Every structure is written in C-alpha cells, then in structure tokens.
Image (cartoon, rainbow over all chains, first blue to last red; front, side, top):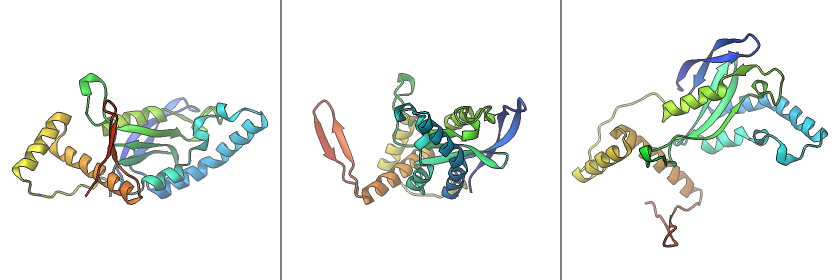
Amino acid sequence: MSQRSAISLWDRHAQQLVPATLVDALDTSDVIQAALSWRPLIEARIQKLLADGIPRSQWPEHLHWDWEAKASAVAGLLAYQIMGIEGEGALQGMMLAATVGKVCHIPSQAGRPLVYIHFLATSPWNDAEFVDPPRFGLVGKVFLAAAIQLG
Amino acid sequence: MKNSKKTMTFNLTDAEMHVLEELSEQKDLSKTAVMRQALRLYQLVEVRLQRGEKLFFEDELRKTKSELMVL
C-alpha cells in the first residue's frame, strides 16, 4: 500500500492552486499506464522535430525515456522509489529516486546518505515543449520537496 | 506494502550493537534508519550479483581494484 499525501498544483488555465495527490510508491502497472497516456503527445512532438529537421542532439532528453523499462528494472528493489503526482484522474508526473548508493559531499553533511533523483518528468501536457499553454505547474517543485522529505 | 510498518525484535552481539551505534552516530541516522539503509543496499547488491554483475572497490591513488565477495 503506497502512501498518499495531499499537495497542490498550479492550474495554469484557471491561474489558481488546485488539490492533487502525491503517491510515494507507484506500481509498475501505474507507471506503464501513465507512460501510455503520455505517448501520443511525445510521438507527435517527435514527428514535428523530424519534420522540422531538428538534429537529435537538440531534442529534449526526456523524449526517449522509457518509463516502463525503468519501472521493470527497479520493481521490488527497496533502494528505488517511483513517486507520482495524481491530479484530474491522471498522473501529472513521475520521479525515480534512489535512497542508497549516493552520499553527500558538502563538508557539513559529508558521508551522509543522499536521496538521488535519477529521473523526473512532468506529463507532456504540463510541458510547454509539447502544448501551449501547458496544464499544471509545480510538479517538479513538489517532487523536489518530496525527495528532500524522503532524505 | 512499502509503507505499512511492522515491529520486530532481534538480538545483536555487543560488537554488532557497537557497529550499529557507531554508524548511527557517523551518519546521523537512527538505528532503524541504518538498518533500513543496510537492507536496501544488501538487496540491491544481491540482485545485481545474481544477474551476474560484480562489485569492486577501487583505490584511485594506489591504482588497485579488488572484487568484493558477498557471502
């Protein structure tokens, strides 16, 4: 059973904060479902980039992230956590974080365990790279706060 | 089931408890948090070894590299 916490996202259309939910541990099936729902916008963006002749080196890096493969690779491992933000009945973002394997380097916290964010992505409809205007803001900030809390 | 917590008691020798307390102090973590970190790491190492990968310690100054055998 994953833990769910109430958070807020910024609704860019209504220009106000709206309630949403932070889920601390997504199942592989949740991740696959979200990745599938993101795919049409990602595919459309890839087709546009190809049509415009933009070199792959200039494409947004997260276009090729395979969340299904990532979820399968870390399934069952306590060292990793895939968190999600639910809002309006859909996942508005996902973050893959590791809770072991990295340590702090700044002198005041040297050697202490560090929560390391491997991947963090907002849903494509929240990203101006894909839609204009995007739907929700604050996804990244909520995830960063959650990672700090996890640490 | 990641966050439903269970309580258990287990026995440690003085030496093991000393190491746990030392790590707890060094890392500024509770003893529970140290044990949790240890379990996460142990599982991760075990899974990767089972996949056929190897775990090495590298000393950059001495230019040495030795494989860590996990029993």
